[in-house]
Length: 178
Image (cartoon, rainbow, N blue to C red; front, side, top):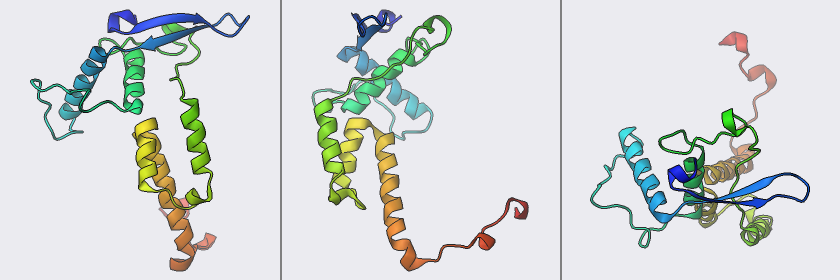
């Protein structure tokens, strides 16, 4: 199934005496380009993007490289999306009952740096925009959006005692009042 989607896979033995196999999957650049073009076209057709993709000007990976988060997301989609877009591998379903998980490899050094930076006092109530951009590039938009939400909550929690009062239980609407 993976080879039919233009993906390259190799198997390795899992933990000793576990009977597990680790399958490493790689998507060649041309397959990623095809996936990016399909995604851009789909976004335009569904109204997510207002810019119509030009088939005569495909994305140039040298001038505009994919972030690691986009690359991981696209490869995951190519593995899990139903045919004809992806290989249709679904954890625990149909012929894939022996698959336990699908996950990307982690950059251990980057994760340690990120953890050290974010546990410092500088990020207690304030997350700089540059850090959110770094999270977006490394972990994707949804993770960056989550931390942006946390940033706005921390800002609101810090200033709410000065600007408003917490409503008492009697002031909160009850389900029967709706």
